[in-house]
Length: 371
Ligand SMILES: Nc1ncnc2c1ncn2[C@@H]1O[C@H](COP(=O)(O)OP(=O)(O)OP(=O)(O)O)[C@@H](O)[C@H]1O
Ligand SMILES: [Mg+2]
Image (cartoon, rainbow, N blue to C red; front, side, top):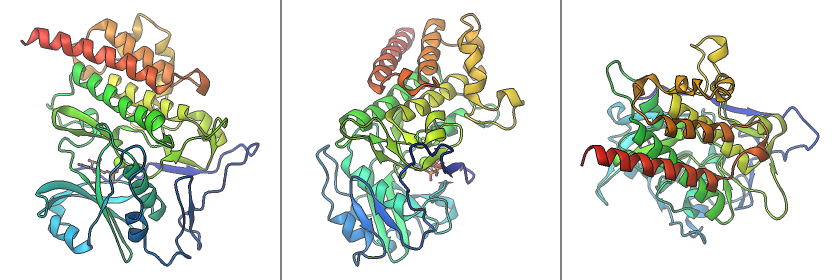
């Protein structure tokens, strides 16, 4: 069970040189939702969200139509939101484990908290993005409920929880993830991001990559989740999308935080932070540490330059069980991703290829050890 988190940031960029497009906040009286995918005026449209979403067919990327559920069906699936079914809580609201009698499948049901940090706009973006998407490294949206003021999302159930649950605040005595599993998760998450950047039409910037949004299935198969902040990437010869700064403190690229200019390289920075967490076992931001160590990237930067000292970066829970060369290469990939200048960061396909190589190498080595 996870405690509630309130780590989301939404701030106005400090630079006004290229004023970001004003994105209406949830509290504005007239909520006009616009994106390159769809336009929706919540006050003018007589149709409720469910009709709008239901009329939206899966797109060219091969996505599936999400199923519209009634509130009754979903309440029955999780025994009326029984605390025993509670899985965790984020900015959108509480998440419950449920069982759908009609299809005999386990699901995760996310219930929008009307007083929460996120709202109906993110609900729609989530449904739209996941209806367009279909990839083994993206969590499947089974359906949604938009009845009256209720907004619920229904996902495939991911039995091993989030990557965050396996990296941080482990119970005393519990074993951390081994090196091969860490690489498998990193490579799979990169593949999910590569799909969003390169295969979706139109391409999508995820904007919310973090350990709690990488969910784990059987065998630690990773899937990206939470697409409420996703944005259609720059089109034509544009290099960025101007937008309000949204994301999670510690994962947000400094260039995007300063200017509001969102690029695919903003996601690459967040991926680098996640990779550093996977390698070091440290949190992106940890106020329980001494001041110099609170920000993971700031702590890691001087160590990137110290070729001999990189072993010091490894998670102590690994107890030295990793090939030093592969560790060095993984740290090198992370260092490239978190570079200050966005155009110096690699494209996601290069990250996928490098991590796939490392993951396959370590899988082969562990299979050799235990035939
Ligand atoms: N499909 C799922 N299967 C199993 N558990 C899930 C699923 N989706 C979410 N959870 C659990 O619920 C927790 C809360 O998820 P949620 O996405 O609402 O918040 P978060 O990612 O922790 O924070 P934020 O809202 O800032 O993104 C997750 O950490 C995870 O443990
Ligand atoms: Mg999440």
